[in-house]
Image 1 (cartoon, one colour):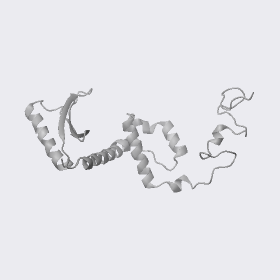
Image 2: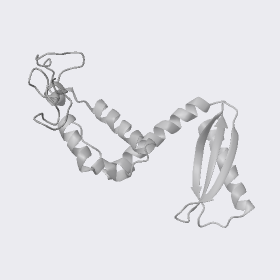
Image 3: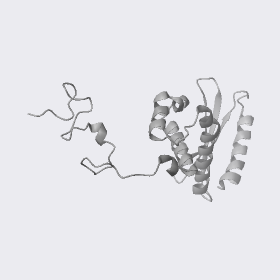
Image 4: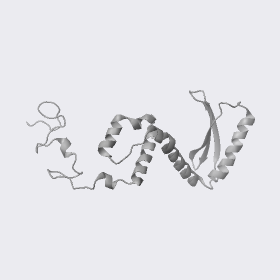
Length: 186
């Protein structure tokens, strides 16, 4: 009985061996669907194929991943991630934490805001507000707009240094209504 090529331990390498004597890791460089001992087709150098548009697209996806997966901003400087970039994306310049917070996150917010404004233009909307105190004792008020059964954040205000009075809240409501009419065209 022949041991499984995926068996760990014994005289086999951790990656296992195939009948050709090559390890599974050596076969992983072949394109999908190809088998046998043939080398993969020659491809242009990754540096020649890398463009500023690809750099921007990958930065955008990294920013979205950071936000959607609730990653700490420091993950972009993780040594394992940087090794992956060096080995598999040699022409990609990974963003720093500073770049992520100062440019990339702001760009994504602008992009999603403009998309939401286009989708909600000339539509009927319902405004709503919610206030809370964060764990850092900051008092926040979020103004949201419901259009076509989708909720969009219009703005979030830090009111920590204001008195919580009806006239102050009314002032924020009026400013938000003005912004929705001008910026969101609702």
